[in-house]
Amino acid sequence: MGMKRFRFLTSGESHGKCLTAIIEGVPAGIRIKADVINKDLERRQSGYGRGARMKIEHDTVEIKSGIRFGKTTGAPICLEIKNNDYLNWEDVMAVNSQEYPTEETLRKIEEKSFTKARPGHADYAGAIKYKHSDLRDVLERSSARKTAIEVAVGSVAKQILKEFGIIGFSHVIQIGNVKLDFYPKTYTLIKEKSEKSSVMCADELVSDRMERAIDEAGEEGDTLGGKFEVIYGNIPVGLGSYVHWDMTLDGRLAQAIMSIPAVKAVEIGAGVDAAHLKGSQMHDEIFIDKNKEVYRQTNNAGGIEGGISNGETLIIKGTMKPIPTMRKSLATVDMKNMTPASAHFERSDVCAVPACAVVAEARTAIILVDEFLSKVGGDSLTEMKAHYGK
Ligand code: EPS
Image (cartoon, rainbow, N blue to C red; front, top):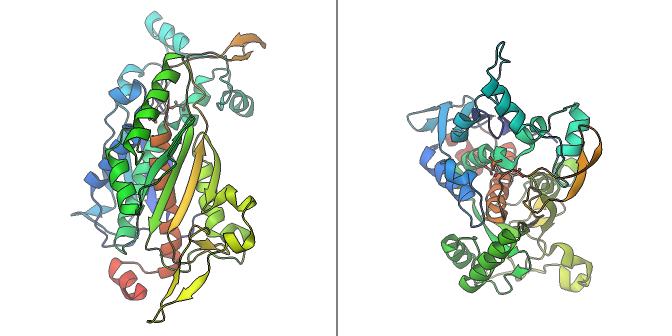
């Protein structure tokens, strides 16, 4: 599934020098602010339950090309986020092999190499696939650290969409067994309340219970997963298509969110509840007002019908499994000699569901902007606005 208009690649290891992205396909004349990107990066870092690494990193983006005097030029945009922790990993993550390594360097490399695969992580399958004997070579790129640069790319996408009034947010609806059963009445309220919560949940009492659940899991050396929701409004009718399976908007969004590390399920609108609803309960009846404007009273479709945006609010839910790096070690195999062992532990988060929500919000923006640019067309903001007619 290739991007049609908004293309990008990222590179970077969890403890390497930096994370980089090059984005291509952004029309000229769009105002992009590094501050806005940095706010999203901070949101990704700050959920309750994050680990020690987040105290080391203060993710900030450096825009290296494609923007002049605050606006895009139409040239590829290069973004970079430095890994502060690299200073502690220079020897272990060195690009060149050293001809005469010191005892100290060899000791550090040995200390950071591991062969006991963490069940649930990419270690086992990744080592076999790429023929790595040191699982460090799998961990470094499979780590969710790379989602930092994806959030930066998503933030660029969000700034383009905002020019056309398309805005979105994300919030957490479940951590472990603690669920948000009653939502505040409006999206504005959900957004405001969730922004004040340490776990991005729109209810104070539920947030407190979520924090306690995270504390308990942490004390037991365990981890917790959960559920989040991504909401985008003001999307025009007509993004995506039913003509081919890989062109459906829901299909593309599902792929974008399912591929976030640890995500195990994606739902659109009523999602899994569609299984028990009758047709007459599920489908959102179409009404027409005095001004001949179409409206609906329900949104079980979550803003997509037939693989196409239908003008209603986009509602996506994602489910994240508990992080597989944990103090409570699981049974595994030592891949050095294929003997039974306890899994490798490296400092980790107890819960990263709020971070995952921010990543999903970014990934959603990336798909929406790609579809939007393909539909509207144009090489500059002026041209796009003329095409869009708003
Ligand atoms: C992450 C940084 C990583 C992990 C986390 C995601 O930092 P470190 O490995 O140095 O502690 O905390 O990744 C995982 C838990 C994982 O299993 O992939 C980040 O920046 O989000």
